[in-house]
Image (cartoon, rainbow, N blue to C red; front, top):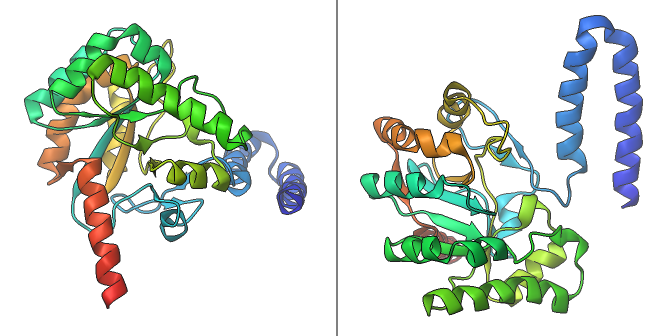
Length: 282
């Protein structure tokens, strides 16, 4: 915490100096760049990414190696052109059917991270996801800031309430894949999820698709999702996005034309474990 405060003070001084130096139109550019840099610097408990050259893997604000000790991941190893497609599901607004139709057409299996409200309001869609071979993961029951939860009892309730509702709907046990709401977490959270038998998944590619009344255009979506795709990408999209519902068929086609195939998080875990064993032997 003291280190974070010190960093904030340093960035504050640099930012003030930059404003005095640039002035005019340059101030807006400086402000944007500083905000992005500061977000990554201070986000010890908020998942963040830094992007390099087009088609290359981004860096996380925590290394993949450090995350692995908590059974937590954000990108695949190696350079195989494989994509792991995931959707966060907070509620239903008419776009999930189009998303499922596109996935079915391309024979792609995705993981849908659901909250309690989605389970309560759209049980038929949850059943359809399972019937069509998709995985349903845990996004907590109430979608809180989980980094603010420090006791196992409260953390566990957010997770287990989703498990119970899912089993009530499908008659099956939930696959233990967890995604922290808004990417907010603490190392204690990751350890608690691991103790509950979960693998935690962040992402290596996402774009601003979650504002229902301010959706990106098709061109804006393709600009981000095509230029930043990379080997081993765990892609985060939202089921509430009208844009995603409209473009997913074409997006999957374009990714396929770029030489990408699609894997599941189950395959991801199997491949990661196999590589870990190989590295240990070597």
